[in-house]
Length: 602
Image 1 (cartoon, rainbow, N blue to C red):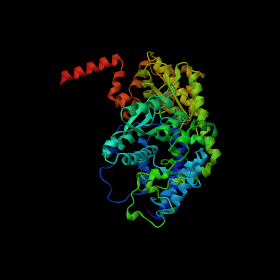
Image 2: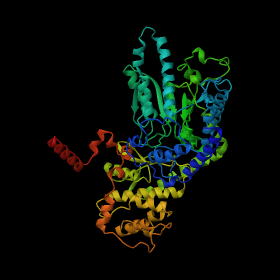
Image 3: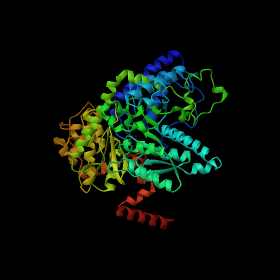
Image 4: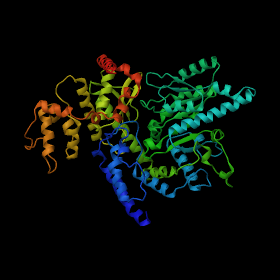
């Protein structure tokens, strides 16, 4: 590709991206594919000669887009937000163009220095104690941008392990190191992220997972009792990982209680605020961080909730030397003449090679300003509260946990199987996407406000979709069919506002369970070629019988209605055999009969 071709294709690609974001609401949120779909679409061998960029972009739309889950979709409400904004995208383009690998100050001075400045800026924005900030006079703290919160958890654990092992080797010089290591034990709550467990597994230390209170928070007394019990067993407590904004329900461990316990027992306290940490730029949320002064390390992800594209996980430590001493490897070919006056971030994490991540953080903070970012976060919280209010007003739903940030956990007042069925039905529709969590062994559905510019209308549409599906699940014995999502998708594609179709108080909503009305809707779209068609247009004429309608409804291929991808996300029994026990007895009997039948065939 020549420079001139790059200019041309670059402009076309920017247009493609802009059009994609503008029209993303017209796409399914989750794809209708099965694992291995792409293998049959792409040749088995690479091309011998280069191909034109136009064909590459066409194939991207043709082959890749059908397999994409659209995280920026206005009705993507799964996991947590995946940060995205125009300034961040442009910054990443510049970073890719530079192609720098900033493992040391000498490798790219601007990369190292901007990262330090951004950690100073962002640390001040969220109200971290000055001991964590890079430019505090005579301070020992500092910050670094890692790839993910999982990496932050891991390197914090490694630093804590190195520190305690150094002390133990000094106290017990004749005891085998492996024996000392086998005595170490770390702590987290049962709501902590799975990366804490993985960190302990890789770090070869024991992990004790502690119970939470009624609000899913780890408390100081629980930790204190666990430490005493383990010391009585001859174990050596050394590390506590707490969470501000847990993945399951966005609960907040009580740092003001846990911190003093860690200080009394000389334990390394790490605070993982991957999602909720960005909200601390709003002063009204900072009381949730009370006790942070006891922490040794802290991390949050601007690439979740501050409009910065992945990857960008910011981490601060109170004593940078305790972190780097655990990770220093210094071969001659990486040394340079400025090492005594500069920071080399290769000593702050696992990988040697590092991207210019601070550039997009700089672009985003400058483009939006602190006030603009505060407005963005407050709007997400407002919309989550709005959704909570709508659910509380509907007697078929219940809220599980506190709604503090942009996450709402809910379930219908029905069995576990009914809630699993509800989530599966919603995700398989392609019109909305959520994921489950388990809170006190109860299946709940997580609804997170994720899009950059969500509106009240988006929340209303989401609620109406969920409410309609929930009503159908609860009254599933009814013979009247549910308004299928294919009709609603057609409405949207034809430019008709589906809010009027789904709204609880509209005449259409009251008629949506009528098979004749559904048939009118669909048949009108089939014969219309001249633009949007009103559901009340006289063009709706011939109506299929109820039997024909039910046949049409049930005729869709099972793989289309519930792809493996959707089932894997929302139906745990598809990938966890332990969940089979939750099947109802009717299904269990049918499964047993099928097994018996298969054995007779064999």
